[in-house]
Image (cartoon, rainbow, N blue to C red; front, side, top):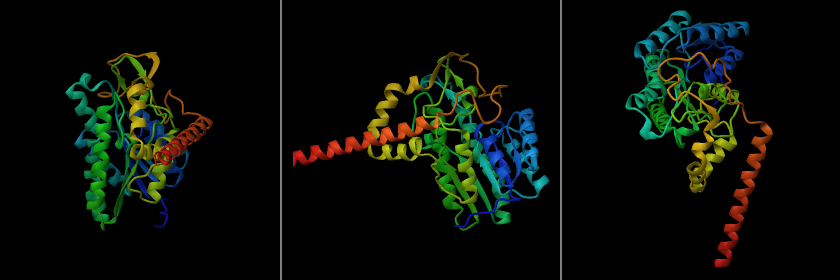
Length: 327
């Protein structure tokens, strides 16, 4: 498939007030796209709009809550009214809540799904009639490595991400031959404000399971999908393709590590209010692509990757010798 020219195309981005959504807007503006950005915090979106205009991009702000169908329909209508078309929908809105499964209330589980899963479906349903009418369009879902994996304390979020990927891969099959593409980016742990926004019922500040990548890694992967659709893009090696390989061939390794240290790895040594978070209402903190958890240094990523490869190679060599001795 040839590389698509994105100049002058229109992208609608949800969850654009921080994290991957914000950084994706910057990257798409650099590519010459016109943008419609949405999230709950209008004042923050206006700051993003000012930055995009400084970079020479057209930008429409249309605030809304992805959990509300009327908001999804209104945002899509606003974008069509101003630009006359939509070429790319980037679903990037999500919320997290950290807790053992039994400590979730049912309302909290439903809210995670309403935003992190059903929000994607709502905007897709709102934009698909237009895509069908114009005979083209592209839905890009910011999924997660948790779409194909698991982590303690995040059972509701992981379930929502699994559901998103299953829906998106099914939708892609239904849309074959229509000119409408569906892509999914399996994002690793990224250093976004999500971990400043998330509620943590254990009372300790949450953090992603390391290593943690720069949000630009995810944004550049979204941009690559916009140019060349990819049903399942895995943009990194260590917490991406290597993890998938281990899940297939050595699942006991990841299970052992996450059972033993997964809960501890997701907590920082700083107390937080266990009732505070952006699950129901937005918070003031966490503007822009980066949060308080820094990205893992590149040299650590490289060292960890080489160390893991060496360990797996040594384990394979040992197993081969043991098999030969047994024979």
